[in-house]
Length: 288
Length: 346
Image (cartoon, rainbow over all chains, first blue to last red; front, side, top):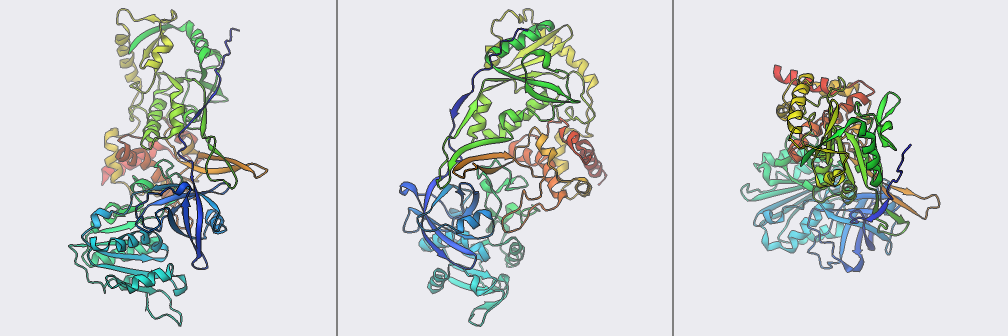
């Protein structure tokens, strides 16, 4: 049989290292609660991450894998060479991350995702509503606004968590509370004897806020169960759907709009989000 | 863009000729089904075949693909590369060519996938036109993928005593060149012959879905809460067969393969399926598509609705693989026809 059998040789060609993380070094950690740990991470070569409020990174530990993690720091913070995250120990990756300490290396891909609409928010009153871990991504925007305070009108921060001991960023939040140009309120679902603040779910704080619906944006971040109640309360106040902004949690694997894991109907949360106007999500059953 | 003729007896010579510079993969019989596999000669090829178990996407987007190598304790990937080999995929049906165009749409969209890009560049597509409907599971006529349009380098059409080859790219031209095996279309007969052949073909190919495909996105828009999804959900066993065999499903997971000595390993991406229970779950326990009905619905919408909104393209090629591979007997044609029935009755 005539057989040329000249299967051409394979050639190994380099590809753009799109999936290769950059090297990060953990420069500070704070144990925040029983389950949540704070990390400050510096990129190799003092490179800036270049993040905007509301974005996320894919953190990587070889042998364990990758996970999408919200960036908690604002790009306006003093040390531009680091960024901050706060992570709940809840799965394989976050468990491994919690074992790391100062000086340990961590892989960083990103930043990814559509940031909060910072330009659109300018010149408006802002209401921040954070439930539970929602404060972690929202903190990037709150600190951004505090650092550029005069660009914005009235600013209110409403926080809620299960119990006083679950509160994150306690000292920092206390410092927000001291700012005279910020309205601040905090509530817990269940108080302890020390607790002097409000008790009740976060929606109970909303009626107390004076809202001028023509010049107010609400930015809401929290667990899925919270969104429905908070949004209903804000709509009741007369706030339009395109002035309510949310951030959604999904299990992004690539962050590049390919892997399909974060898809909600025709939207890819890693690129079209994670921040959304409520008007973009209304009616999407899988969104909230 | 031109046509040439090839005597049927020369098909073997053609394949041998291709093998001089290319790895050749083609449809091959495997028990009572077909697969794309490496071939050494034309005798191994089954040109008259129903869609292969896996579509040719495995050559562009392998089931398991190395993204790079790592050492434990380090943070950056080394060896971000891909092994490529000049390859001809021979005998691809038009439905599968459409499937490859869908993958192109996704993987070339900014930020383009570097691995896919390199593989795609090394592959020449030689199509083979179906002249007979394959089986009752295909819906290629409705999806308008049963006639060659674009997306191939060379298309072969059986014209009785000979083949008509349509050369559709520079890569195709490079292969045909002025090789004496191919007879030039001197009197511009090929186009005329093809038109006649396709008129005959149209008599044999009938639409399988009771709606024009252009109407489907609107119908899906109105069918999100249809009871049909509950019915499909009840049957589905969440095995993920339908997405694995789909020529346009591209979802993946990223995993680390660690060496036994724990010194390092490879980061890989592997095919994943939106039909699996944990696909849309997050670490905190929330699962955004917990029900099988919502996962099946998601799959259908990714073919007929979301993809049209996002990429302006249907991601169903009508190949029928999802139906053939379903262990629970879920039929795409039946499901879509049920939805249409319900939609028209409202």
